[in-house]
Image 1 (cartoon, rainbow, N blue to C red):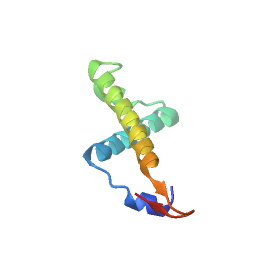
Image 2: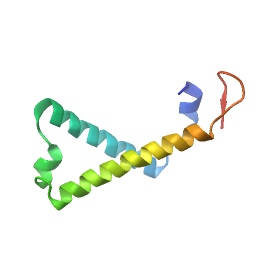
Image 3: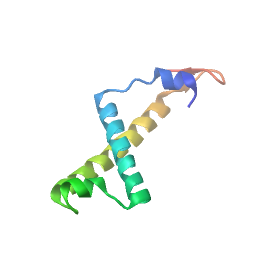
Image 4: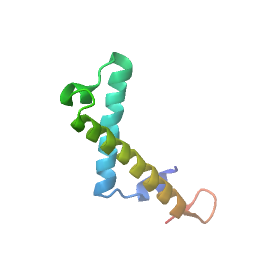
Length: 86
């Protein structure tokens, strides 16, 4: 994405929530990869109902972000090369 597109894209509350959950999920996967430590499992128990809910919410956040990004990219219009309008 070029700079004009990034600065024109406004995040709503759901987008911000999804972004925060994706960052938390990414950090958790980093802990799993580097240290074999699953923070969600440590906090809520191995595949407990709460752990599964957390994983589902993070997964839904990823789907939301993919759809949001695809929608944003689909709606932008190019007038001339290097120029982006809404």
